[in-house]
Length: 390
Ligand SMILES: *Cc1c(COP(=O)(O)O)cnc(C)c1O
Image (cartoon, rainbow, N blue to C red; front, side, top):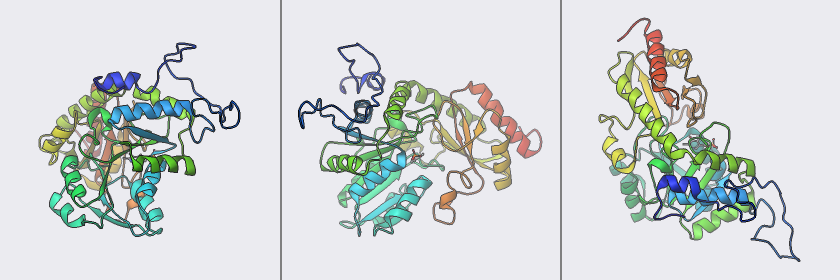
């Protein structure tokens, strides 16, 4: 179920057709770990043992493939399990990977602490700077280019199509972590990427109640390798988690519209606020990546970071003063969250090139009443500035 249906139709219908026996509209949660064989090797619909295949996980995988415009999708127990399987499929000792210099801290930690000791060569670079990218991506020597756009937490934008062209000319495979934008707003495979990864824990699940990850690819040899690794190393999505993720995805389109609309309201209102040194949101015309973001994204998403004029003390105080925004890691749920990256999500990259400045606060703008969120932010800014500031 892909063409000619629109995104929201696919989000609601792809991956599952009701069981003729019951007419159920949502797939059941298939908890059985094993499947009866009709004679030795006589599998019904290919199901044998649930690590190798499970109907609920298959439904989610079909849905994810349809949403990203891929042909194969693999659902994992977490975003990092998905990334690890893809990295193992792409790299071997001596291989070289170039990553954006502000990728998710856990992604950097995975490569730096697990794959590098195994013999992989890691280089980080500002992938928004295409001239620099041409220098860093060496023909025949770079195997993988890994990027996030918008990036976390500095909201930098990378031109996926332009980067893919440069990387492909050098013979490298391009991976996009599409967690922040989601396929509702950005379709990396259509822009030239070779593989997409997700932490479905964030917007796809959407309700902060399921941990999961995914890899989406065109059909081919790489997809076969990822499928084999999913089966052989076993980091699969559990059936209940797969079901919760599907249930979240049914409303992804409308959620992303509202997340984006409210984030835009906050971003516009906070520009020029005396307590705010900089608003990092790609929807602002002043954002250095705005033109590219407008070209490759349908809307600008629900993530927004602020750099506070009062530096680190103000950023900490602000994060602790909000009342509707909850101080917590993660993002992409219906509830608004505030994160102090330097010490929370990005603590693992302190002392590296990926270290996040202490004046940055990241907001995951949820689906609450927009005025309540704006008031909350303005009140907290007033508190850190020590009195009315605007
Ligand atoms: C959270 C996150 C991950 C890791 O996913 P988990 O589900 O926590 O393992 C990877 N990339 C990005 C952009 C994330 O936000």
